[in-house]
Every structure is written in structure tokens, then in C-alpha cells.
Image (cartoon, rainbow, N blue to C red; front, side, top):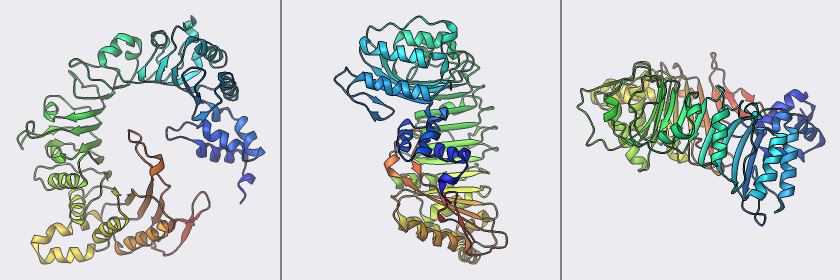
Length: 500
């Protein structure tokens, strides 16, 4: 079917998916590329304001330097740049805007820019604001009425620095609509410069350590900090610690209400408590542990845990594998997640088998591999030979750990494989054959779906967003175990999804 014969509403949804960034916002750069495809697409794009609400402004240097907006390079003439921005704001209509600012110019260039913004896109239309840097020399921000301020702002992110005038206006005019505040600041600096916002937000992320322990206000329930510096956290539901941590503070506080935890374990030799000491997380559902010292989890109890991730640190993969094997074999290890287990580094056969035995209740297993051959050999050795290992375990008690994969087969529903190498033509066909073999060899078990994705290395940027992945190829088992039926995916590419 010709895509241009689709109803406009369907075509609009497809094009929006095509231009959507990882954040979910439309990319202005991608919009401009699609404008030149055909008149129909151009008309659809320019008449739908939702495609133009992501206003990405990079205004750096004097008039002799290049100016960038949304990744597009304009001429060195700032007048042309302002005209392009004006056109985008007109296309955005009256919709609320997502604004990114990096401004480092003198007052004579800042003045016409803000004149345009206050005319076409006054602050009351800004929904989200991300500030890399705002420095405009001697420019003075015009006096703004309260109802012309940031009254619809929902989230703020400040990475580097911001002009005091803009800081005061943001804090003074922000309303209870603002819920998210991320800043490369300490808690004391947030208290000083953003007291109004601090009293309203539910999510706070700080990039700089504070001078001492502090107590976040009770309205903050999601907190990201460099290190553990809290006096009280009984109201915190989601906690992320971005620096290496001792686990000693975990034994001091009450974790009754914590729902998710993301942290990096530091040196254990000076902080590891006696084996009989256990930290109780009665409400914890999601746990992410980074580094290699996973043995810290032998001191955690989380009866409601659903999802668990192991993310390798800066050491070698072997250190991560050894750390995982150590905690899985520890007699005090009590965690038994009932949802998703994800391991971000490649496992060998023994450690994968131990992991399967340790988590008999998991429904989805996500595995990351770095080499095609090693990845398939590990998957095949565990999932394609489970009947053999079961017989071997019956014959010899010393080989009992080899039979643990049979326990998994009564609970596991989905196997998700993440392959960290460049996709090449023919790989998907090879892996379809392999996935079918796994499903064939695990008949009689609960496993009914296998997914396989490749990492898009060109889009990989280290950080919270992580890597991007290709759309998965999916192989599913039907109740009647019918073989060989090939489905078409939503884009009409035959063979991406397969039933057995």
C-alpha cells in the first residue's frame, strides 16, 4: 500500500514517530528534512502545530560566528536566524513550547532575540525549559507582569549557568504546575535561588554535593543526588545516587516507603557489615545496582521487588561477571524479583545458569552481549540443552546447579536479547533461525517470546538516556505451536516478527 494513500490522521502519526527524539519531542531538524519529500507531507507538517513546539536555541558568539538552532546551521547573519525562528514559532501556533536555551552573546544580539520571543512565544507559553547556559552581557530583561511569567512551566533543567534576572523571574512566577527541577547545583543553592520552586516540585535532581546533610521538603518524592547526604527520607519514593556509595548509610535510615533505588556501590572492605545484618526495603519494586560489588545485595531484603538491573562499572567485564557470580552464590542472598531481570554485560554459561536458578520467579530476562558468536553460544548452551542438563543433574548431585534452568522454564515468559555490535545485512535472518531453535528446544515451558535488538552505535551517547536500539525482531510461540508462519511488522517489512 502506498503510504500517501493512508488517511491524513494515520500519516500524521507515522510522521510524528519519524521525527520524534528520544525525549518524545519532535525534532525541528527532522521536520525540515521531511518538508522536501513531497507537497502532501509539507502541507501536513506546516498545518500541524504539534510538529513545531520543540524550540531549540543555540545562540553563541558575536555576529562573526556561526549560529545554530536545533542542530541547523544558519548563515552568519543573525537576522536570517531570527526569521527562521519566527517562522517556526508561527507554525507552532498557540501550543505550549518545549524550550532549550544556550545563549552566550552580547546585549545587542540578545535584545532582538528576546523581543521576538516575547512577541511570538511569551514565557506563559513555555511548558518545559532546559538551560545549558544563559549569558547576555548588559542586556536587561524587560519587566514582566506576573501572568506573563512562567505560569505554565512544568519542568526545568539548568546545566551550567543562568542570568540572575531570568533566575528570579522563573522562581517568582512559577506555579504549582512545575513538578520537575534538575540543576547542577547544591541543595543550599537551590534553597537560595529557587525557594518558591523548591516548595512545589515533586522531583529534584542535584548535580553538586551539599555542604552537609539536609532534609528535602515533604513535597519532593523523587530525588537524585551525587551522594548520600540526607537527614530524613521517609517521604522519598524514588532515590538515585550518582557517586560511589558506602552501604553503611543504608543501615541507619528507615526505607519503609522507598519504591525504587538506583546506586553505585563503593569500596566494601571498610563498610561491609556482618552477614547477619539485613537492610529491609518492604515497598521496593525497582532496584538498579551499578559497578561490580554486587555482593552488597546479600544484605538487602525486598519482598515486593519486581525489577532488578545489574549495570557494569568502569572495570572489566570479567570483574562484573565475577561480582554477579559472587552474590548469586552467597547463602544470604534473598532477593527474588517477580518481573524483569536485566544484565548489561555478557555472561558465560555458568553465571547465566546461576542467575536463572537464583531468580525462579522472573517473567522477563534481558541479556546484553558484545560478540555475535559468544552471545549465541551462551544462549544455546543454556536454553537449547536444558533437558540434557536436567538428566545430568539427576545423575550427580555435584552437578545440581546445572539443572536450575529447568526451574526458570515454568515462569519465564519473554527472553530479550540486546546485541551490542553494528547490525549487518543478514544478521536478522540468522538470529530468527536461532530464536526458533530456542523455542523448539524449550517446548513444554512457559517461554513463548524472544526479542532481539541491535544497538545503534552512531546514536550512542553515554548518560541517563543510554544507547538506542533497532526495532526488535520478535519470535513468538502460539498455543498450538504452529510452525513457520511469518508476520509483517507495522511498516510492512516481512519477517521482522515470527510465530512458531
